[in-house]
Image 1 (cartoon, rainbow, N blue to C red):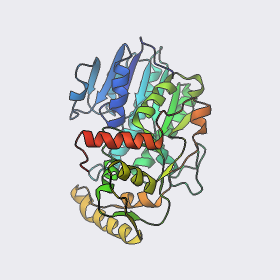
Image 2 (image 1 turned 30 degrees about the vertical axis):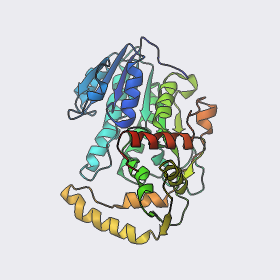
Image 3 (image 1 turned 180 degrees about the horizontal axis):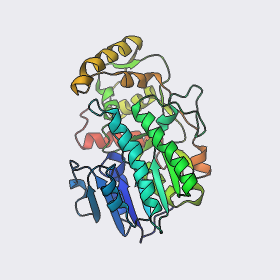
Length: 336
């Protein structure tokens, strides 16, 4: 795997998030100078003892970005707005689009700048009608998170082409691993007496372990073939939700009893919940995007990652799921 030079100066956005924290810790142990942008409310205790220069504020604050990016060689743009009811569409656009513009423009001012690693999402492709998809699949974002992620990415492609800015776009698959809370609910599902699965499709999910993803991001920052290219980063194969649940249930020594339920009533219920709770700034107990999870297939051909980027994830689907399931138990997040 390619590595960042030991004398490099790097900047990471979204440094305290799940993926960002893994990346920040790796870079702090190998680079001469690590700068990181974090919101004022972020908890930095997990980084105690690491040589990191913190810049506290919003990633779309022009003055903050100017100070943080001055003189850096590499920028890893990982910041993302969480999918929560209280976040406005304007906030998504600021975090995903405005920040990308600021970082790219500041990078041009650095005479020794090497590369911007921009984190997008596989979600820009939406549901894959005839899987597997690829980097060339049509764009079909399904919510404001994906729409603004795509806006930021498309702006960067155009800007970098015109200004000759060195960059690479990373489109991660479903990120999971120790410390993740987003897919924690999936790892808790096998504890139920009966596991409900909405709809009757395969519900293909394409995973990438956070350890492999952050290795791929570092590798892409250095690999010549990654320049100006987008890469879907995921395991060699997607996996049906039912199989994920079966692997977790076996690890927890639980029976895996699933029941299929029609999805339409849950879409209606989700719409009602969103209409009631979102104006109040309260996270709905059920909402359309979560229901839609069961109706979409996320399956991609990752040959470009393997053959062009020359990167292959270390952990298989089964190995990563089992490792993560054990971590949840060992840390008290799941109690089988």
